[in-house]
Length: 291
Image (cartoon, rainbow, N blue to C red):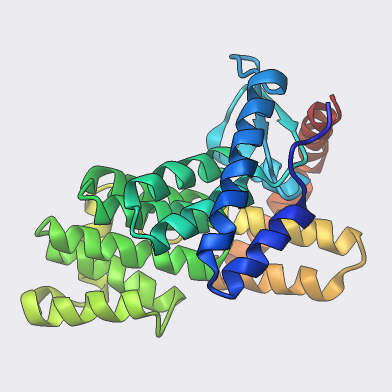
């Protein structure tokens, strides 16, 4: 069965979005959505044994395996369903239809659960809609999945705002400081720090060690999650094998920035020691994609 939409069709709609012509984009996106939903009903049955995704590459699927530990076979449908739903959410946000935007972004996350930008945008929508539990849970989920320091910093800033609203200023301070380390200059980070200075000066003036200890005492990891660095180094290994030395270097430097020189070296060694296991997992995932 042919796929119902193409990247070229979505690019055509995104040209409207780049021009601010949301009225022209919406009917085409709704037509695509209906075609996708019909396709999913007919061609993508979901069971306990199989799940369908739109991962960008095999390493994104491997990262999903590491984080989710999902026992189901992953089948790559090959269509950018996630991108279409994200564009639809963008239109709805522009129209201030936040409930519809939330529903569209939930589908984008469903189709590409490793895309942390979708998760953070969805978390913000839950904040706007007054659902604080979902807001905090989605922001925290990014800490386990982000393979990009800027997205990691955005998640920390969101959690800083979340704990300020929960009247937990020292936790907010800990996450704000972590956000500043990974996303210095981000507006959300500056907003959290400014609110702390105004509403909780004692927490704002606490030492870095005190803030970190508060995070650890509540069960939050005191350091960036090593899984982020592992995923980055997996991507670096893939890029190196493909001859993309600049790309491999960029991923490796990101991993080193997250966990430090010694830990990065240890993680590199860990990945090479378990290379056979990773290759077997890669073969399993890619075999599922070909099914």
